[in-house]
Length: 59
Picture 1 (cartoon, rainbow, N blue to C red):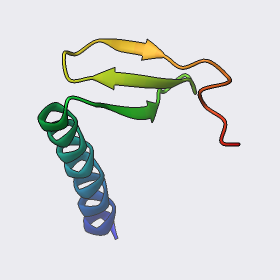
Picture 2: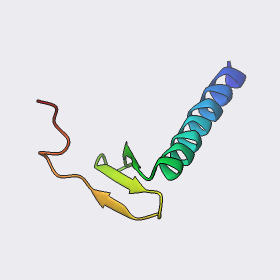
Picture 3: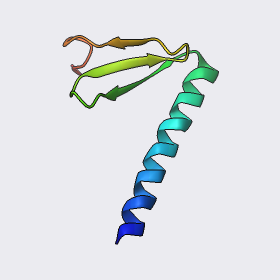
Picture 4: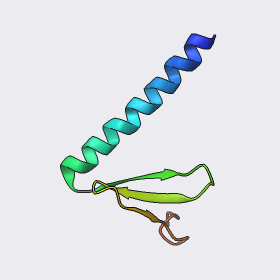
């Protein structure tokens, strides 16, 4: 069971790494939730901006 958990954690990490590469190639950003529960945008430059409530809702 431990191997399954480790494998899943590795796949999640690799997916995030791939998303960062795609964002850099396309001049965009990725969005994720921090450990504190805040949604942020991380740009390919490394700049991280917290999203406001309006940006984080889908209408």
